[in-house]
Figure (cartoon, rainbow, N blue to C red):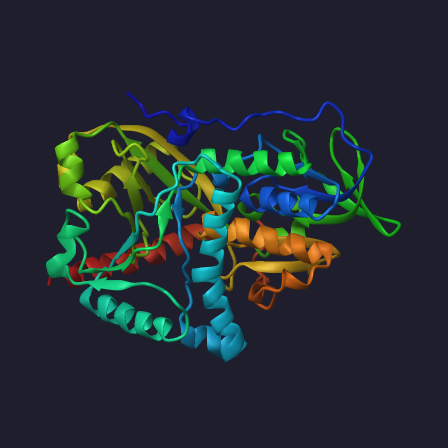
Length: 431
């Protein structure tokens, strides 16, 4: 039987396609995009005294906020040396501190303070290393990192790897004990509820089709009527449309594919996932996987392709990747298979700022469960004129490329290159 195309998470909490009966004529702020970023920003803005309208083209949470793997934890894609070369020592260290510590603490505090029932647990994250050389490089990088920020980390050699994961596929790993996992659909719904409780108006099925200057503020156009706003925040990330072309050209929407297995025998789960960790890896294919919150299924994500492919193709690729790591899963069915769009930047860093007068917070590059609520909060503080709005992610670059017009035509080429690099690494591993 073909897998269900809806995310596994939606069985417990499907995004509700509710809209306001009537849009307000005027508000202090319109937030476009009701995912984690927009909902967090709306909560902070309303708690700060602003009137807020939170819009989404689909049901709030329809996008990556309820489709992702549900992993919570900081991280970075550029080395300390690369960050320092680009931004200087002080900003580089601030970026790493926010990415690893401040954002994670904010996410944990938000869940606790708003009493969001989302199956959040501290499981720890294990990053499987694709080769001995990569393991050694990761160990050196973590030593550098621990010297400048208070991060708890442990290198797990291959000889001890099976205490964390039941495979010899990796050459050891990095363990980050403070990371966690949650149910993303429940988490997002809880955050939207928190924004509503604070006083935000939320309207799904209400796309913003454009924004024009109107006196000292802006006129936000929608199919259901226009709304005047003093400020506008774009929180659309990988779902940014051509109506906002300047932002769209700075975001690379990368497809990520996720699948959930049928319920597995308890003894098999204990063998494959003894540490119950969130698992990521250093391959360019970048598989990431975990147990479902009830501990009965494996939820497995990967870049089956960086561009859009059929769900049948994606499912077949995910099954191949999954059984390469865990051959014992060959007899078991995939019951759900879906995809979502992540928002990457050419700098591989999120960005907060203004463009053409409109605020934005986006480009989380795969760390949305942690960075999106945090930077949604920070940009809202900036919109309120608060002194504690400062973030190093206002200092990052947010470039485009002359050959990127919004549609990521180049992703199939990038995917092919990454595939070749992984094949090369596999051949090295075999020898």
